Structures are given as C-alpha cells and as structure tokens.
Length: 98
Image (cartoon, rainbow, N blue to C red):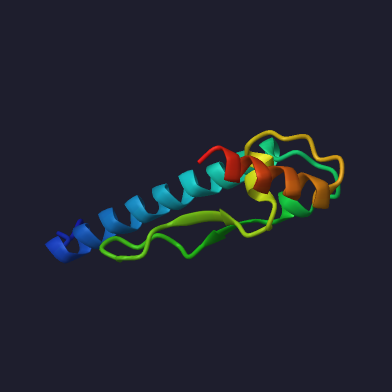
C-alpha cells in the first residue's frame, strides 16, 4: 500500500537532489581544473580544492578555488622557467598594462 508524501517531504527531496546535482557539477569542474593545470612540481595541481557542499537557500557560494600564489601566472598560460623571475615579469607587465 502506497502512502502519500507530504509537501515538505517532496520539497526536501527536490532540494537534496538539486544540491547533489550542483555538487556533482562542482566536482567535475574541480577535476577539469586539475587536469588542465600545467605540472612542474604538482603544487598548483594539488592546490585545487572545493569549499563546502551546496545547500539550497544558503548565502555562501559554492566555490572551486586554488590558493597557490602563482596560479594567476599559470592562468595566463605563461611558461614558468624560474618562478621568482616569472613573478617579476608578471608584476612588471601588470604595471605597464594599466
């Protein structure tokens, strides 16, 4: 015998399904970012992390982030020969391009 579900239960199931779907997309983005990050030492690739699980109605965003200091240089597809020299070139280009 089937029992009817309440509207609260249905809404809860929809929110849970939506949250899991967003988390799955975020995990795919995280994997793609790791795969596309160039590797020399592997630090930048290991730096990709995801923050918090998605919750419907939460005010915090679902984030995939990399806190490695030189990730911006890699994002510009600059070949790293010497990290300290590359940072100097990057900073110099930033000053001249303003």
